[in-house]
Image 1 (cartoon, rainbow, N blue to C red):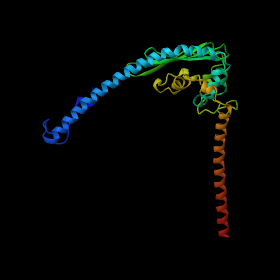
Image 2 (cartoon, helix red, strand yellow):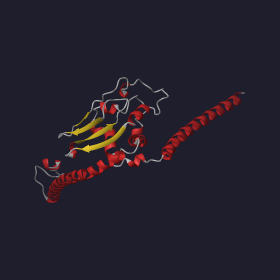
Image 3 (cartoon, one colour):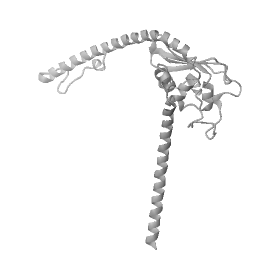
Image 4 (cartoon, rainbow, N blue to C red):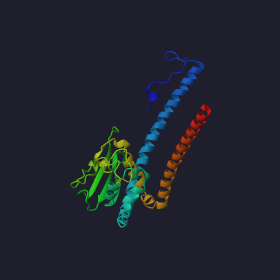
Length: 261
């Protein structure tokens, strides 16, 4: 039922529910429009339910292909770490330690719940590695009937001295290839329940990387280098502008000095 149905709209000139002339005709038209909107809303709700059924059908149809794809991916060395490093949003979250740990990642999969409206799970499968004991780390995203989001993660069993989420600040450490505003690890994401409804990393993996990871694995190295070169050129351009401004200021000071003489 629409909001207008709860309280009938009233036009100017109508008093105590009694209208006459053009005002009465307009009020009748408004009420009929409201009734039609209720019908449109009902059809929209029905369409959403049918679309959901179709989506659930094709989630099941795609799954065997994703399984076969995963088996092939496992034959490609460093597929997933390369994919993540080549992704512009995820690469910004990785430093060298994270990348090294992700070299042991040999399988990623996203499983949507049977009722896809209620959430999904992201699974990371690892080979034996020097960082943690887990061979599977998962993060689940849930949406309850009231629309409130939540998430749960597999506790990571870090090996002694290898907990990447407890590192000291390394902002000035030359070992860091990428700078962070905060010294957080990519793996901190598993410890952060956060607002699952606004979990950008989970959404990027589910909606962007998982449907077609090959597009990021195959990003040409030259393309990444070009982007870095453009950033450097932009910074150099800003430096040149600053230098020109300083030179202009010096010239002005010289002119003022000559005038005083």
